[in-house]
Length: 63
Image (cartoon, helix red, strand yellow):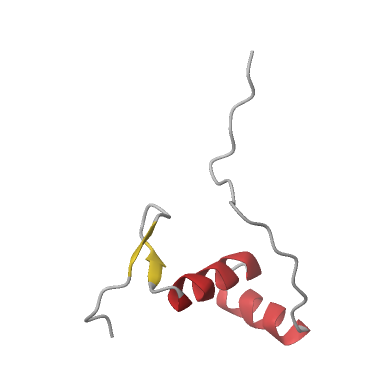
C-alpha cells in the first residue's frame, strides 16, 4: 500500500536565520514564521495565497 502524500510539498527548501523579534512578532500576530516568510516571498513575486492556499497573481487594485 502506498503512503498518502502530504498536502503541501515545497518545491524548494531554504534554511534561514531570523531574529528573535521576528518570531515574537509572528507569535503575537498568530502567524507561523513559515507562513509569514512564504507570504512575503509571494508578494515580492507579485503573487498571493488564495483561500485554498494556492498562489495566484496579486490583484492590481488591492489596497
